[in-house]
Length: 387
Ligand SMILES: *Cc1c(COP(=O)(O)O)cnc(C)c1O
Image (tube, rainbow, N blue to C red; front, side, top):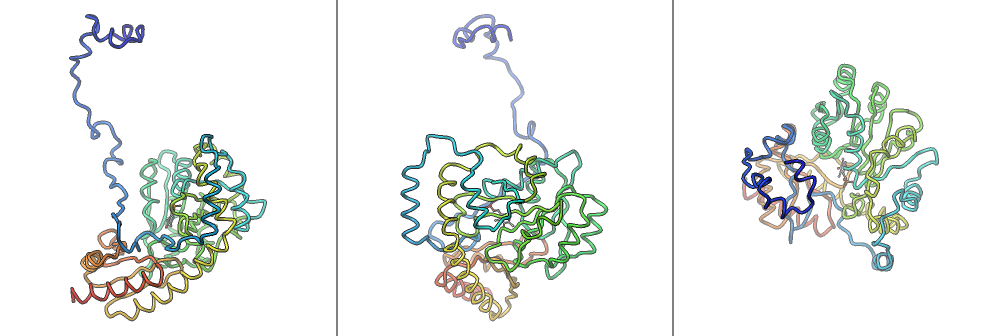
């Protein structure tokens, strides 16, 4: 049969010939995902995104502001002439240069670009995923660390944070010593808790780890500290950032900064055209106007203070201080209040029902002043409804 198929390209003839007629009736057991796919994949739950049309969308840490008209026109002109018939610049030289300028990276630091920083997490995991290799993070933290460990066949360890969501350093150091993780991710500030871990404790983790430590600075624009200046100091330290939370979530662009020794290896795993022509073109312009985005971030930080005070002043609500563009808060009947908010047209993130440490927790992204007021009103109404 193989001969028959290989020797004739004309499938119509093949299928009609007597010799091959049995192909049509060949009766194999029906193929199902359960039979073919890896057990870990079958056990996964897909990353769920709530539908949000028409809602006040405060669930995904997006920048709520539009760009000034002048910049939008600049983007429109650049997009109009962009060579979308061509593959993008695989090295994204101009964009990388802009990223270096905007982020103040020294020449000694190398940059790798990702289709969002999610892609960079995956690339790092693929690179170290020897049989039995461990990816370590803390819990609760960004759920993609665990999901990507699973995608790539790594073992995952989530070291519990202390009750106030600070690093539990002795437990962490003990886990590192015992398990020798190949890769550690620490979100700084942490998502979904919003706090920044103690920098001195992070340094101890970097020094104790024999694998790579990646500081995930997705919220750098809202934070009071960064590990970028530490890059030259530790040979196992990498810093990852994304522009998603600053106002480019729709572009999908993140980067990893670190020494060439690591990044030239990781480059081998990067798909050659992972950042398209349009994202490159638009991001170059936006980074040219980085100051405008940082001013928006500054406004978000001021509004975060306003929102935090409102939450703290709401009976039965416990709000956690945040260095990011969102606030985690705990309250009785969180799941029902979440539904109450939704009925009032406000979408936040329900963390209750996920990690046990987030029992009765919701997370609200800081929106525009108007959106924040709508949220506070809807929250108070929803709380009264269930009191
Ligand atoms: C949002 C987020 C990311 C992923 O951002 P991308 O949009 O994929 O660039 C990574 N890490 C943390 C901690 C985040 O909150």
